[in-house]
Length: 179
Length: 130
Image 1 (cartoon, rainbow over the protein chains, first blue to last red):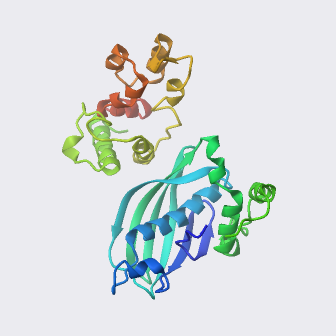
Image 2: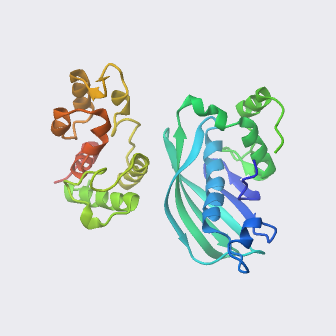
Image 3: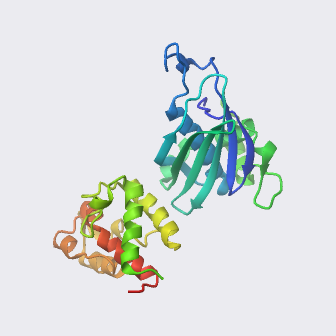
């Protein structure tokens, strides 16, 4: 899977908030269509990055046992443009979480300037047939690649570790597929 | 302890935020699905916002008893049975189920909830001053 719209976590406080950076680069193919001779980071992909930041926070809350999906973007506001060379800092704060899903408030900053803000709702799917879509190896790989376990803290303030059941499920699923 | 008017205004604000409708559209008789355009995912958003606005907890199935609507003891051939209707009335004392009872097609159930039903639901969960 190469659908990464964040590059690294800089903070990951389990159950509270997560902060990640997204570097915008001229090497990203789609920027040359959006738009020709005027590359601008598409707002939809900013929303996806905010959703990835918040979604992994929501997943981690229940040790990746729930099937979390982006369900609704209630509000999204963009205040300025983001262009190649910019580094965006996404902050996702967990507002509420229950059996059926969670809500997150998220912001994107260009340095100190507010670039965008959104309210995002996630749902926990309960159809067991969907288990195949949520490969534990993918989540483990993503969290490691994004540095969540390098900077993260669990709810007691100790270092964030991969949940035992996720590691076990990944091991049981076999060797990782080519990313 | 909120008054009934205050509860209605808070629910108006919740529905405006969740459904993107105008305040004037949110009347007591308006149905969430038919008149205000709510879809199934909006119900979860509405529950989150009501929990926050009224500082209450709404457990799964309390507002919308999906377990009754998917129980083969209570639903036959896509219609809710007598026993099912009894169960729904017990679980949803805040809702006016008379119209639904005339032709209790499960698919139509979501369409019956009105803003007034939501107000009564909240009133049953908080202490109302009137």
